[in-house]
Image: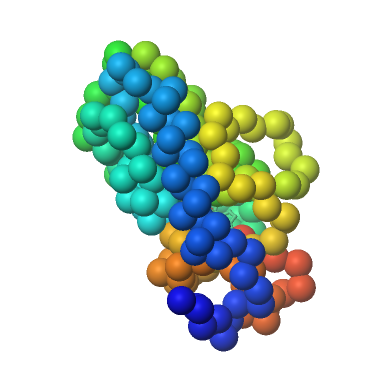
Length: 193
Ligand code: IMP
Ligand code: MG
């Protein structure tokens, strides 16, 4: 079914079909890798919620789901890496095989913080599944064990990703028109993930 393009979106980067196909592949890979393990998926709210609910139905294993919500401090234009927990996990992590599900790895500072925070809780293993990984220079290389798509350094919305809390419900990932946020080169509008 053709999707009508939102007026604020410049172009579609990833269609719903591409997202669904890649999510199936990731689910199959995770199913193979975690067989016989004690899998706990940790979704980082709010951006990863849409991806997580699709991904989890492609994993053919007993598993649990938990969520955390964080907000980055500092200048609104760039991730500072200083992160505040808005909602912590309900489950203890000791002995669990934890897979953190993220929407996008941009600077990687948020992910670095989450990794340090969760490692300190002594999980049996800790890996990361990021739907999107931006190709851009980084202060330090950031590793995600599972990556959906490597994308160019553009500000994208849809499939859970927002600008100022909006566009999360678009079924595709699209590049936002610069006129929508009033700038030629994009600047992160808000610290909240
Ligand atoms: P990082 O600490 O720079 O890696 O920031 C990661 C967070 O910033 C993600 O979880 C998103 O919430 C947000 N973010 C980074 N790039 C984009 C984008 O292109 N569109 C929407 N949100 C983004
Ligand atoms: Mg966000």
